Image (cartoon, chains in turn green, red, orange, cyan):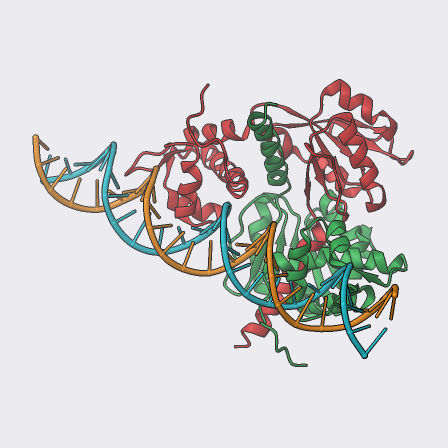
Length: 217
Length: 217
DNA sequence: AACCGCTTGTGAACGCAGGAACAAAGTCGC
DNA sequence: GCGACTTTGTTCCTGCGTTCACAAGCGGTT
């Protein structure tokens, strides 16, 4: 399976492809067979021209004058994003947020499978969430090794996030999604991505108040 | 209180300011009095020059040859972000994720106060989370009006997110943070910001697999 | 009092993402 | 069979964000 296309896809495009994929799945379930870029862009909340440019990274996959075939495009994006391959993930920190992620059915249909839930609190160990049992943090390395998990999710308190990150990296995890409100340092070859819920809220509030000042109309 | 500075601050800068604020608070708690841009940038995970440019939007607030005074800079950023003003927020959808947000103490210290938790499921109504009682969704409009809440957070299932968004907007909420995996439409004047956890995971996985292909070393 | 080292703040160049406009291509109607 | 319409794929351009590099300024030292 050769790849004659430019092998790099911008990160912003990848994020939008995931959104398109969700919309296309909904359209397919609704029985739609084709869709034009304008409609798809409206459903995804983006500009039609930008959408077509995003799709052009996958090579030609539409029919001029008609639009895109829903099922075909969905499968094409699935293939590029690697949805059909199952990826083993471990999740550390089973508080409310960790429970929410472990319980979220949406991950399974996107190729992500949690193979281990870990926490340090004895009270949480043994809980069953989303078909898995919470295990003590000491077993982290063993599980990562045994399952070849490549993705780790950190939903611990900030104080222990760095040590968890170090242990994940040492155990061989190459991609880490961090929800703890700290900036993590990781060795080269390990990609850390941060999601900070309070920062999102802060930005939202700021643009809101700035709009009031800018447009006192 | 005049503002001779350019009154627009880039959104990307605002997001980083929130991160700097957190780091500065930690430094202040640790007893540090001054900090240089290099150290602060390392702690925040950004480029030193970019950090200085970000701070330049607030006007001069450092001392050349020395660095930044921790407490002063912290207070300056707090003022710009409006942390000290309390903002009333409502949260709709008290599942695992909603509970995690309602329970997260970090919001209170950033100027965000939840004044209403809502859910449609009778089983959840009456639960107490983070000092508040979950109320039926029917009371949403009344609470928003009474508290003048300006921020709404949606953590409902995707199917009902749009209707909740409509009701929030009608009730007068101007800023909405959406965690449901759908793209919401809102009238002009209402700012919707989306956080999609599965998209984050998807992007993380993609760059991880792309790195393997790109650098087979 | 003058020098030196350190750090900030800013100006310029680079690269990238986003938007608009246009040509290619395929389908539908006559 | 031919023309016109629709929609894609691409190209150009504009603006923003990021990075590098340097001048300005302050404290400490002699």
